[in-house]
Length: 312
Image (tube, rainbow, N blue to C red; front, side, top):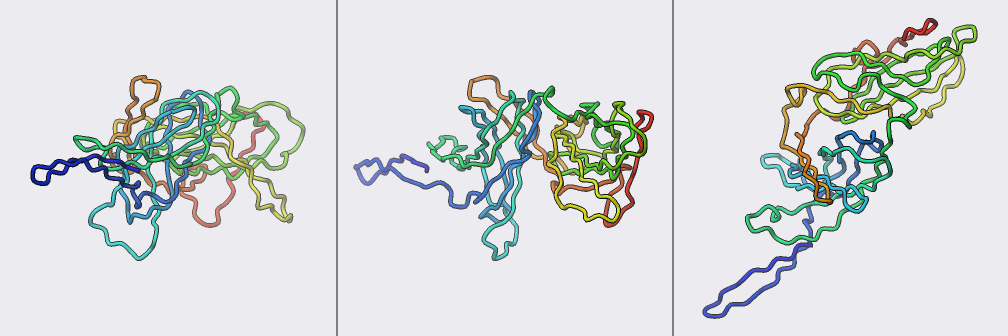
């Protein structure tokens, strides 16, 4: 709801008129945030997606504020000019927010759709109620079952990443793949039958080859896949990905896949200094790759690695 006060002069008579305006009817109709689980005390990127009543909407003035135990995302949505629209009633959208590190805990996420008049030389008073957009889980490093060895890698380069997490020799790990769906990085693997003999030695971990990534903070997840013995009926159920930490991708360019957009700003309600970081715009649909960094498309051979001597 937006309430504005304006003065109208008619002859020698001045009258004060109160204008009551509802929140923008063309604001995004739905909203959900991802990822749902991040590492504590590390800045992270949060993506907001959903269906909008605007055709090819454009977003700006992204802000993230911690208010009363809730993470409130504020953003201005406007119609992008110069696009031919279909007769659809809604269109998918995506925008990103950079958020400073949070303490461990669960945080309800809400989104407040801003009005353009808030940024006029004389801003209008606005009272838009935030809408629910999911719940964010924040966990300390010590409580994670999986960990990554290197928390920092260079942007725009293919690198190796070691995933640790109680892997044992004598177990055959196969089908190592990497899914990139910004701002999440999912490392999938299958723990098969023992390769022979008993072995309780903890091995360093599984090594994944990452494709070139855009600069920023990525949340890394380990996704164990169910093992299916030969000739058996394979279950369709897969285990939920487990958080393995935050990976910071550093580089001189913001994004090696697409140019950077406007700067995003996060401000906390307790009056501390605002946190500024650049925004990102990249391919968010994700790319699935095998352990050698090749794009995986269609049937592929399982990439197997035995770990008898503690070498991933």
